[in-house]
Structures are given as C-alpha cells and as structure tokens.
Image (cartoon, rainbow, N blue to C red; front, side):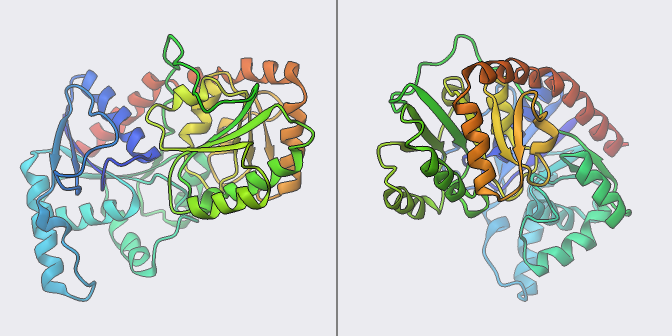
Length: 367
C-alpha cells in the first residue's frame, strides 16, 4: 500500500515517536510510506527519519493562519492541504492527533481517499475548544476508521459515538537497545527515581515534587530526574527551590533517546491527569524498572499489573503517591521482583503483533 502519515510537526513528543516507529515497521513490510508535516523546511526534525520513509512537507499555504469565520481563506488553506495530500498518491491517509485528523477529513472529503484518524490521548478529557469538538462529531463518522489506544476508550467511543468505526490499537513496546547506553552524567546519587514527559500542566509534576519533598530526609541517596521540556519549566524550577530540592532534582530537558535515561533508573513515576498509551511508562518497564503511577484514564491501568510489576495509586492523591514510592524506594528486593516482571511488557505489546493490527486496519480502509 501507499500510506501517507500526517502529523503537525516532528518535534519532541510521544505521538511523533510512535508515528515514526509505525512508519518504520510498515516500510520494512514493503509498504510505501510518506511522512508529511506542516512544519516549514527550515525547522529541523527532533527525531531521525527511518530509512525507506519519504519525508515531505505540505504546501506552506496549507498552514497559513486565518480566522475561523474567514471562509474564503479557510477554503484556500483547505484546497492547498488537499492538493498536498493528493500529490502523495496515497491509498490511505493516516492522521495523528485530533485537530490534524479533522483537517485531513475536511480536505479529502469527496476525493474517495480513505482516512484513518488516530487519537493519541484520551478524547474524553484532552482539551479542544468547542468549535473543534463540533467538527470532530461531524467529520469522524466519515473516517474509514478511528483508532484509540485502549479497550476502555473503545467501549466509550462505541457507546457515545456508534457512528464512528472505532478500533483499539495499543502502541508497540520495543526492547531496550544493547549494549546499554552510558549512565547519564546528571545521575549524581546512588539511586534514581525518573519521570519522562512534556513539562506541562497535565503531567502534574508538581505532585511528584511534593511527594519527593516528603521523602527527602528518609531517602538521602535518591535523586529525582524529570526528562522533557515544556511551558511549566519556570514554575517547576520555582517549586524545586521552594521545597529545598535543588540538590535532589534534575530537569535535563529534551531526551533524544529515552532508553539512555530509563536504562539506568531504579524506579519510574507517572503523575499525569490523563494519558492515551504512555510510551515512557512502558519503555521504563521494558528496561526492568518498576513503576508507580496515578491510576489516571486510560493508559497506565492497561500497562501496570498492580503488585506484579508496579503500583497504581488513586489519581491525584499525593499522600498515597508518597507512600507507594516509599514502599519501593526502601525495598530493593521488591524493586528487583517487580522489575523482572516488568520486562514482560515487551511481549505483552509486541511490535509485530501491533503492526499486524495496523495492517489490518489500513487494508480494510483501502478496501
């Protein structure tokens, strides 16, 4: 098949990384994969493009800002986007992230080119404004398939929006590379608690910092490292100073290769308000790292098996989070047991099985 994959940009992010993994493995199976973004040619990609995947850009006119009620400008932008997509000669177009999906469906309406719309978070919670929500309800029934990342979201979508052709496909979990990358220089203490994600409000890293503050005196040989970048950096740095954690917390910024960080962690934590399928949680477990996570909708509960390879705590409960972290930080034997079982995540979400599911969806869409 010829498959054109579209996402807004190839900046640092879980959706971008997931799309590149999908594109690479579909290409390996002999499909002709084109990867398109709105980003200008002058903007560098954070991730490397897999061998065999064509990298193209939409016409600049396809991303010109215009007011929502400026209908002539909207039509010009939509026409440019449609022409860019048609030029790829795709059998199927695959969109990542809600707003991109809507724009693709609008642009290709009437062309006969099937569109698969992929949700990358929890659409029940992830915020989009009311105009986009209206357009989502209007356009998603026209998609050949709507892909969500958990059976929980599949059940919700089938109940709330039975007109959507919804399927559930989890992200694949790749085994960590061998040999293990070098230990990061910013790991200065014996033990390391790690989290990884965008420094944004929905990740609630302030909760993690407050939990670690309450444990600092009891566990002086532990360091917290939060990898990632985002709009909350200044606020988090201020909170770190306020909690007297300057010598105990590192914010190293964007991480090109997550396994280089996760492979040397002793414990992983996730405090998100909502998730789709959190790659970093699964990748930490693939490295044999036990995890503590808020039981937020909808991803962590399908990855962590409580009291087998990690701990789920009540969503938003900082005190329970602190207790769960302490129970593993103070028990190396339990961490080792959980970590051994955590590695099974690679087989539970085996890349070949996930690509089989994607091929099935894409073939049905083309037909």
